[in-house]
Image (cartoon, rainbow, N blue to C red; front, side, top):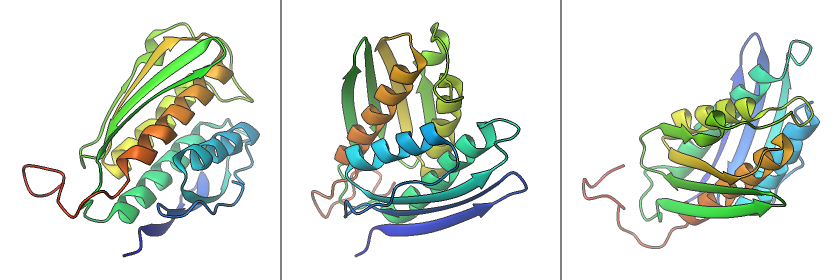
Length: 195
């Protein structure tokens, strides 16, 4: 059974198409018009070892918030469709990722229930990366979790500089996701019998 999906989301602020394939590593370099977001989506695909294509335009003349949040939403919708009924998946994933002075930890559950606990917003993270801040990252992950039905906890164990905080976090999300989406049985990974 194919675990792939293509989703297009068009609003007055953004136009985004995401193609996701959980069982291939073939991907295209993202094209969103925002260099650092492209870099993070590329890192997500490489470290999750998934096929990913993102083509997007947005109102970057205002600021990157709409584009980043809506990309997370569209990616979440594609992930939910690609997972199907979630039968046989590992469901849980956890990863620590260091980047110089930064250490990020992400734990996630593909439970079908959306929740984001995002610790970096309580800390003093400095600056931005190409106009992307840790607050934009929070909105990206919130969109992903809400539309894919993911419970995710993001902890920042060390780090202050926004570029490293964002990149380490995205790579930790990717590595946790890589483990969680693996199909390792035919059983539904829930005592309820469904996710």
